[in-house]
Amino acid sequence: MAGLEDLYKEIVIDHYRSPRNRGELETPPAQHAEGLNPLCGDEVHVYVQVEDEVITEVAIGGQGCSISQASASMMSAAIKGKSLAEVRELSTAVKSMMSIHEQSLEDDDSGVLPEPPEVELGDLEALKGVVKYPVRIKCATLGWNTLAEALQS
Amino acid sequence: MSDAGQPTLDTAAVRADFPIFDGPVNGRELVYLDSSGTSQKPRQVLDSMHAFYVEANANVHRGAYYLSDQASRRMEGARTKVARFIGATEAEEVIFTKNATEALNLIAASWGRANLQAGDAVVLTVIEHHANIVPWHMLAAERGIELRFIGIGEDGHLDLSNLDTLLDGAKLVSFTAMSNVLGTLTPVARIAEAAHAAGALVAIDACQYVPHLPTRLADLGVDFMAFSGHKMCGPTGVGVLWARREILEAMPPFLGGGGMIANVTLDGFTTAELPHKFEAGTPPIAEIVGLGAAVDYLDGLGMEAVRRHEVELTSYFLRTIKERHGDDVTVHGPSEPSERGGVFSFEYKDVHPHDLSQVLDEHGVNVRAGHHCAKPLMKELGVGATARASLYIYNNESDVDRLVEALDDASDLFSF
View 1: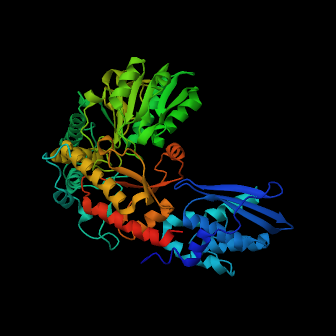
View 2: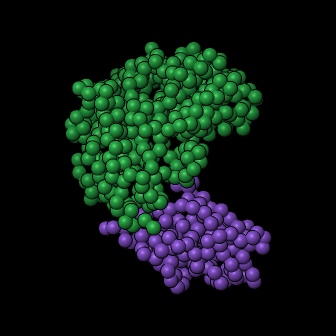
View 3: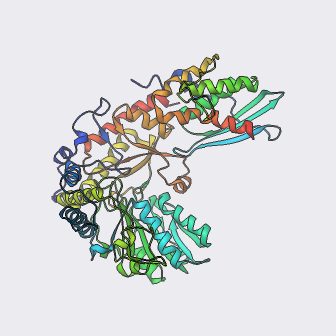
């Protein structure tokens, strides 16, 4: 498919076809959130179990387009066994890769965006191409935003 | 074709009127199949708006000076054109709003608040656009009215088997004249007759109807009709509410402000005559002028010819996509072209609609993907989203062929 290789990388399609950590966890002890992209109806359900500030178990449910579902699957593989601090860094790095720079009004007003954390993104790098398709950024970040909600719940 | 021999459209000549087809878009020849979302605009409409700004721009109904009079004349001329186009008996029954959504909200907020009490029923259908559901939910939350829904039956048609029960005690029936998802043409006159017999008023969302079929209000027999300008070759920013004079006169005003008053004192106000009573503030004058030009353009083509063209192209679409893709494709809505418009929500293999529209975009084929602002209908259909292709006056068989061929690429990429 000419032109779309950057978006639909082989590893993305692989995660879409064979999603990792698919299922549910019992709540509690697990925490849970359901994310919805109201524009297109993509749904991602995230279950995480946290013990001693470490994500010990993760499960993903929902339905939607290849990017939303593959991104959630890749996220689940990347965060399992990681500390919450590491997961926060990963999340910031993934969003920054998609040109979402989270800055609050309280941050310094130099106009210079903070450098994204230097983290090994691994397979998550494959989602880099999404930045060229702005309407799909919401699909790609749905899993990460839902994870943040689940961790707050 | 039952209408064989009757004039249809010269799509090559029509396309020449639309500058967007002049050159490539994003490097590709444009196959625009999202006219249900918004139509493209002919040069005649763009020129009319440009001419308004360079020749006659002033605020309307305000000044005694020549220019303001010119602006008012162009705007009111457009109102007359729109009234004739839909078969209204008086131009004053045509209220300009910012879009069809505002027109439907106006019915709910003004007529609804004045006429509906707790326990009163409003009948809608499960195939409605959110614009004809949410205003009624809002009123239900405020007033405790009951909402009832006509369901969906065979082949994408409404299920009217329990219509009499649904109408029992209803004050209003508000429904789409043509589904923006299924293309279904609903039996407007039949429902209107039954509703009136039961003592209810009738409103239709005609966003997908007025741009595509000859519209004669007398034949439809409704009390309110809402539609948008931008789906019928006009600009965004202007919509229409039509309602019968006696209903509009009895309704309280919607927005308050300049233009809609007869008098204002520190103690209160009185409202202006129709249509100004419902047009507070400076209206979208240039857009109204543009809508008038759009009506002239469609009149020039002839709405009978527009409808014939769309029925023919609908037949071609349904036949071609089935011949090429067989059971790999599911097209929702009526299978008989004469019972529907050229709006096709479809599913292709297991490819998600978003991915489908992304792949089609690589071929320059513009289709919409999502719930099309009809989430209750998506639930009825048992899908989260669909891809939707929709046809208009500038589309031709080649556009359909390009869509049908491009589907193969999605298959290569996503089939499991």
